Picture 1: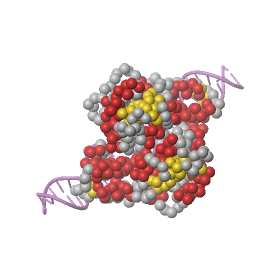
Picture 2: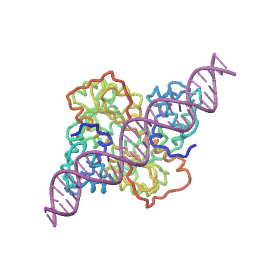
Picture 3: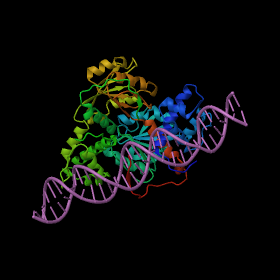
Picture 4: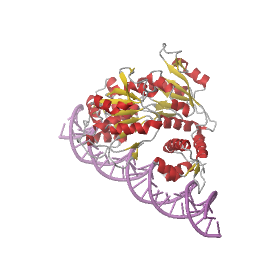
Length: 227
Length: 227
DNA sequence: TCCTTTTGTTTCACACTTGAAACATAAATT
DNA sequence: AATTTATGTTTCAAGTGTGAAACAAAAGGA
């Protein structure tokens, strides 16, 4: 295994490869070549081989990859074979929706607790997940061994919440608040900024090149996969 | 106004600048220099000026930018001065949570309709938003002048849903399904892929450099803003 | 009028990502 | 044993984004 730094874009692609492999398994395939995978899912075969080669030699020359074997390897690389416990801060609409978002379970994440400052909510349950007082955050994190935090509070509280999260020793954070956060030390934040995505769509609809009155009907132009 | 192509990264930054300006306004400031803005929000002053210069001359030399004036300009550039109507496909947990997500309203987007295939849900309301039969998608889109679609269905249905969206003439789509979609023609898709974000966090927690037994306590290292 | 401030603009170096190309190597098949 | 297939690996060119530097131009203040 190489020790060079792995780009986040590489690990993002590993996620995608894993999905593709799952789909192939569902279709009953046993092996796949980098070329076959690339053609089927509009990827780049050289990139696939390069990405995988960072972590080891998983393929068989002349054959390709044994799908089940490769799935296990990628699962291990991404740490998806280990359970993680999630705490969601903010028991509003978004927080409660996330609390039983199936995607967490699919990636081996268990939502262990919700947190809120609203006395009326504390003690209630969302599905099987209890809402705790944000004041008891650190204790609850320790009790449930929470190692991933989700920020689902309004922007103005996000930085304060992050400080608490960092103080509790949690090193992985997903932030849904539209607010750039200051991180200290070895903490990883993934921002999911719906506002930026929305405003990007708004710009697309408003921009000069869409204002020329041309109505572009869906045409037979070559389709493309956009990330 | 220049006609060169604007990078999406530039418009993403415009969203961020707008937020910063809103915060400054809330604090009572009237003008700000690119340097002041950069220092306060951990941005790059040269980049701010470059980004803004793509769209016109909004500043006053020797003074900086009049905050209110600049806000109006960016709002117009991003098309946030125009109302948009949103249709959400998939009235599950995520779809219904999005239906009254406040961020839509803040960016001048109105959620006009939810769509689902489940007969039991059709006709129900989520807040003020009615759930319509997905079969009546195109008619409902026309009736409510929906110009933005949100895909909140399981991955296996996402491509089919997208086809319907494209057929109805909608050109702006936000996709929450963890599935790379094939786009035809002049349609803009923003993927919000929580799975990739989650698995990226998982990798961070699992990767070799986090396995050396060192517990890194929050330290006094220079803080940084991570996107 | 002169000086200071700050924008608008260009230029450049650096870093990163991508995708193509080339080729040795290994496994399987004929 | 020879051939075919597909990986593992290196190299390179092209494109893009970033941030620094430099400087003219404009506005305001002394």
